[in-house]
Length: 344
Image 1 (cartoon, rainbow, N blue to C red):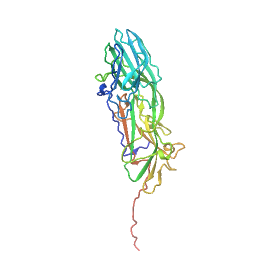
Image 2 (cartoon, rainbow, N blue to C red):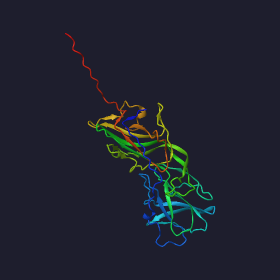
Image 3 (cartoon, rainbow, N blue to C red):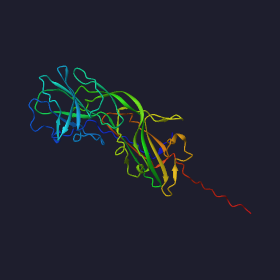
Image 4 (tube, rainbow, N blue to C red):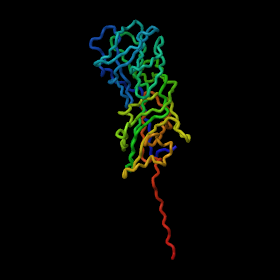
């Protein structure tokens, strides 16, 4: 398998449970609360770098509540309206402690509802949903809101591309994550997900639906990206595909006919900056480095490192790829000798 020289690939992991944004910023308490009614406030543990859902932007969540060993609220939609969290019909505090389970956004997946809480939920994600979850256990009657601290259930994966070689121009048409699982089973924790309890997390199992998924796609020539020395985040403002099922990663390999393992595929063209001539791919480029029915060539990069073998929930992984002097290019080099003068 051909690799790139001077290629940098780093994975930066940002911790899942950090200091939560203050709920006081949310104005989540109604001006005139109804006595005895259950009210909600929502916060999100400090988000991963490009997560669009934060304490200030979360708009809705679905809540289930259980008390005395049986369901009390089921599939209740809670929405933000002018800074206040509202739902209907209004529910009132029972005399027994209540366990609350919530998730956001309002996905179609139905969780397994038990007698005292939510259990497992099968979830398929094509990279565009930032799934959140929150649990509050053993809450009792009070006038203040039930403050739910949401956590990110998925891994945030981004690709940054750059080129600092002024002699070449790299034009990118597509970026793809290869051989990733798009489906998994999520198990809700049976403990409060407060900011002070970072270890209270849900669990993922049964990864499946292994597939390739585009994270950047140029519809035409005008949407392709020419790389510069400043890393470009091609994850955002295009397909907005950035959220992956937490999963074990496999090493990238080429068996002579196909690539295997979890990888990043960059479809691009490389030109001589001075003349504008296309220097890769060419008619001499091997078939495995060509993108079918396209003018682009294919560069493959591993997502694993010596210390990175899986994507964990709530972490952000940033892959910085620098295309400066790819080994797929074959520059014209010179070796010089001079014949000695011959005696006449």
